Image (cartoon, rainbow, N blue to C red):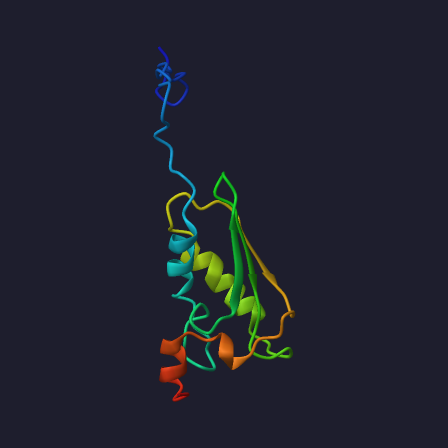
Length: 125
């Protein structure tokens, strides 16, 4: 008699459909940016998208995401925290693959890069 733990499970072939795939498509840039709005700069209390810290988002067909971002000052030590939060908030987005943040220092960030909402929140008119 074969014990249940040692029994070899029987596999059943699943028909492959031609045409559109039911797999999840790569997310759009808008979906990525919306998720990145959950990443808050701890010093200013405003999200990194509205602060203008996200310079570029490149999404590959397979869902891998390359993000170029900067910090408000060159010596700011929060880069690793920001990158961890980017990965954490993008992880649940359907179709996301590997998230590869890259901190860049050029062009240097300036307050003019902020959204109108961020400027208003900081009292800059």
